[in-house]
Image (cartoon, rainbow, N blue to C red):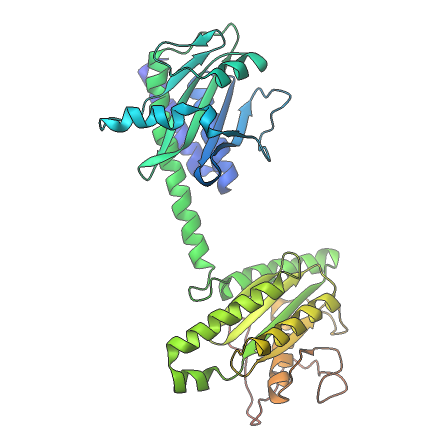
Length: 381
C-alpha cells in the first residue's frame, strides 16, 4: 500500500469513528477501519480492565470464527497471558519512546515480537496466518489494544505494517478520547450535580418517549412526584450545607426505592422536588414503591418526610396523550398530599386522604394555606 493509500485509510478511519453513533458504533468503526487499512480479514478491539486483570474484547469484525461474536458478552483473557500489554509495553516506554506494535505468525513469533504462545495458538485454532497488535494509549497509559489478522496464505505482516498500525492505534485513541468527552458532556447535561440522579431535562426526554410508547402499544406509564417537607426550615436554621446533605440523602432513598421498579428513572426536578418515572410496571407496583419512599424518608429523618403524588396510565385517570397531562396529574396529587399532610402517597384516580377520589382536573391543587400553586417546569402553561 502506497503512502497516498495509507493516508486515505487513516482519514477514512477517523471519519468513520467520528460519524459512528454510540460506543459500540465507535468500536466497530475503529476495528473495521483498521482491518481495511491493513488488508486484514479480521480485527478486534480490546480494553484492559485493570481492576479485573483481564483484556476484554469489545468488538470483533470481519471473518469471525465459530467461537467469536461481533459484540461478545464475555470474551476476556487474563492479562498475564499477554505480557506485551504490560511488561513488554512498559519496557518500550521506559526510555521515553513511543509504544510499538508487535507481530505474530501461526508458525511462531515474528522478528521483534515478544513471543506470545496464546496468540500463536489462537491463530492456529481459528485458521489465521498472522496478526499485528498495537497498544492503544489513552491519557498517557495503556487503554487496550488493536488486533488485525490475515488468513493463512496471505502475506505476513512486516515491519512497515507494524509501524502503520501504531499510527492507526493513535487515531483510534483520539477517536475514543473524543467519544469519552462527548459521553461525559451528555452525562453532565442529563445529571443533577448535587444528587447524581437524572435532572429535569432527562425526565422530559424520557417521559416524551414513554408517552409515545403508551400511545403506540398501551405500555403503562407512571410518574411519582415527591416534595421534601421542611427543607426551607432546615436551610434557615441549620444552613444550606445541611439542606444539601438532606437532599443527597433523599436522593439515595429515592434511588433505592426506584430499584423496585425495573428500568425506573429517579430524578431531581429542582429545589426540593424529585420524581420517579416508570414504564411497564403495573400501577400497584409503582404505588408500592412510592409508599416505600415515604416510609424510608420518615425513618431516615429526612426533613419532615415527603409529600408524594402518583399518576399512572394504569389507573382511571382518563386519556393521557401528552407528558404535560401526566405531570400535572401527579403534581396535583402531590400538592394534595402536602395540603393534607399525608404520610402516604396520594394517587390520582384513587381514594385520597381528603376526598373519595383525587380530582382529575388539570389545575394544580392548592397548598395548605389555600394559595394556588403551579408546577414549575417545561410542562406548565
